[in-house]
Structure formats: C-alpha cells, structure tokens
Length: 69
Image 1 (cartoon, rainbow, N blue to C red):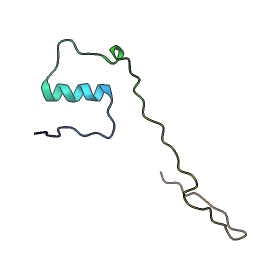
Image 2 (image 1 turned 180 degrees about the vertical axis):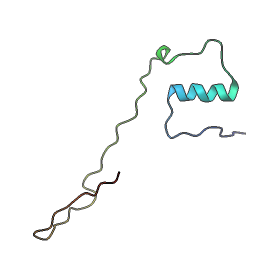
Image 3 (image 1 turned 90 degrees about the vertical axis):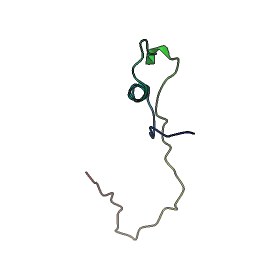
Image 4 (image 1 turned 135 degrees about the vertical axis):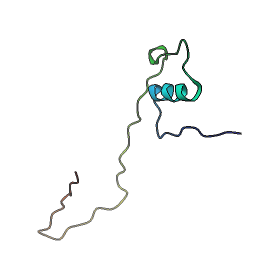
C-alpha cells in the first residue's frame, strides 16, 4: 500500500541508520559504513554556461555583484 515515512533530498548512511532505529528499533549487529564497498559523496553540481547571452554595458558602467550575508 506504500506509506512515505521519511523523505530526504539526499541520504547518508548515518541518517538512514538513525531513521531505521526510530521506525523499527535498534538491531543487535548493525552493518557499519566501513562494511560497505561504496563511497558516499554528493555529486558535483555543474554550472550552466551560455544559457543567457551576455549584455553589453554602456561605457562607464560596471557590473557589480551584491553580497548578502
């Protein structure tokens, strides 16, 4: 019947283990991250280029990035 009990943008083994312990309880001999032959890394994000044509600024004007903190 399928019921979503957890939804995450990205999962990692420690978070998954914690979720499983909450949902079904702790296990006696859990698999550790080191037991798995998999590397867990976030994929690199690619930056789009060439999507919008560059604009020509009138003489004397400069582009300035605003900073938000």
